[in-house]
Length: 400
Ligand SMILES: Cc1ncc(COP(=O)(O)O)c(C=O)c1O
Image 1 (cartoon, protein in one colour):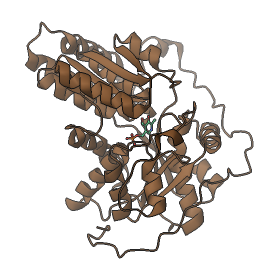
Image 2 (tube, rainbow, N blue to C red):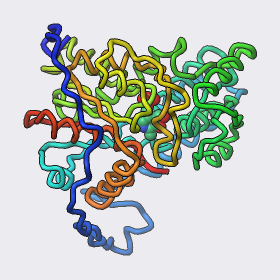
Image 3 (cartoon, protein in one colour):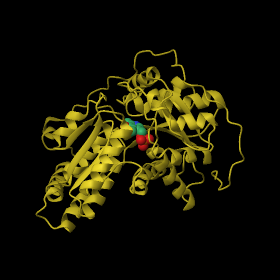
Image 4 (cartoon, helix red, strand yellow):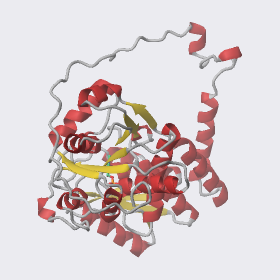
């Protein structure tokens, strides 16, 4: 369906360019040094004074969460109390990430109303915290005491933190050859890492086998939890709607398995069906050059998201979060691209590095290079198809 609820007529697919050359101008950052606000001495140790001598409650809120953390992870407390405490942590720590207009990027790329949804505001710096906390809550509720999944790193650190706060054992599978710098963070939470010779897809199979044989909660993509994961990512759509009061024209997302994009689409579909928004955004997918089945299927105009040749996939320090020969939720993502008359394009490592630097210098956000793949696809689409003047949202994650 399109945003008016009609099936769009089949269109001749314009072949997107493979990548977008970086803009030539990259001068020194503006406003990089902000004037320091010098608070009066008396205020420094006592929090901020508000009007009428009221003070902020920051310390109280933090203390409250500390208590909830102890309760949620402690098996001596009744399950109901642990669940309640965990829900409180989830509520206050996950999501509600910032959506900010990127005026300087707009000037750089030559079109207006680009908003950055910065998932770096989540505790471990990516949107993966959303699905990690949702599944740990589910695992806790259903009486599991361990959880497992495969990861390139970001999802693993999100799950390790989420599990540690609930007192669950966490077993993280990572391909042996992956460079991820996040292994230490995973271990620091008390989670276990199993390095697997082979690719990401193989680690998913092994993690799933462990889950089946030892009755451990399976938090891998593509299993019985898909609906829960899509729902958790759907929150991103609700948050964007909360800020913009309607759906933007486009939402650009970096894709690997396609779960994030499919979940955001589903969130917007729900908002539209409930009469909250006047339209459903056109979805845009970006991923690593030649190494993602969703982009491949879109460019080939194929109806399904078929597997690529495993030998064609080579990870680098930049593309690691995005590559796979099998996109586990790829068909959902491809369908979202087709139904919304979306767009997809590849991004090279060079361009992902370039745009992450640009965003840091122009907008002050330290983003993971791979997460700029959606932005690069958006720019590519705009160059090829001249998208209408409207609001664009780009999903980005933090760099750790
Ligand atoms: C930072 C980052 N962005 C995007 C993605 C892609 O997400 P999905 O697998 O939901 O398509 C990943 C996947 O690991 C990631 O780590």
